[in-house]
Image (tube, rainbow, N blue to C red; front, side, top):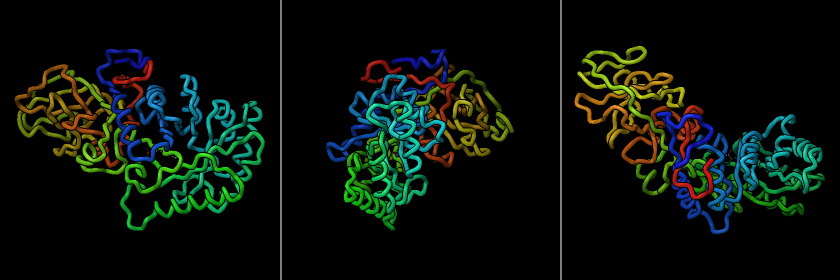
Length: 398
Ligand SMILES: *Cc1c(COP(=O)(O)O)cnc(C)c1O
């Protein structure tokens, strides 16, 4: 096991264990779902969905992933500084002031209009980028976030191909509802619009480069073709994007959560029936019981909205193979758990807040309780929680 050197204190009791063997496993599950030869561009934005972009990227590249995707130029720069050389897609648009940083880091920006493409090309020429800047034309087939109208794609593609210092490396689109089973065939219609645009780009005499669209939802639901390349994110980290049954999580999909958020018991005390605990005293002990204090809270990304709703608990933790409820309000730095009157757990026992063990909560359980999605649960784990890497086959994890 290796310590993330970004954190100065190896004895910190709350840690996020990152199972790189599970990351590889999930990549294999994704590969089973796509045609052999389909490329994989792994989304490692938002610090690899909170798992640590650099170690995750290294592991994926060593497992044969051919491209990575980030949301910002800074994220791309971080990967380049760590010595990662594979193509890095810049999924999001940015401001002109940042174009030189993006092209200087050798990122492949997504472009949605001619003006943006021209400015990127100019930044590339100023920076003297050998061979020009590779860009991907983003086609908006229904997400209505970024992208050009499908009917404009051939014209913009021809322009991009004609601008000195610019290469059309790919054409892509994105799906807003591939995680839903919809009777209206929305994703299917997006696919036809997209393939039609690609066909018209070809007819206009322009090579579209790598054609790609599918996110995790499209791959897992098989509701869109893999085309030349798929762009999975959340599935690599072990979660299906739509709320599944526990069986779908661990049975059918066979995805394995990569992150385990763990802490330790630092204090235990007996309280009497009727006593309240934590801010607001919103939870009152229904009987004499033992309360454990955990050194973790919303300052670590363990959401305050997972506090008990009065007497009703929303979140559980796993200690010695058993689940115990979080009671009272989650504080910035501390959380309380009801161990019951005759507890088995002991002071300093390890506690799992969420992770791959099917006996305990996973990020979907917390997401459901917090009215969000697992993406936000793993992304929210804050900088003060050291990431520890295990099971990796790539050289140094960090
Ligand atoms: C984040 C992102 C992905 C990956 O999405 P998941 O739902 O995590 O698989 C793919 N494409 C684009 C454009 C994205 O922004």
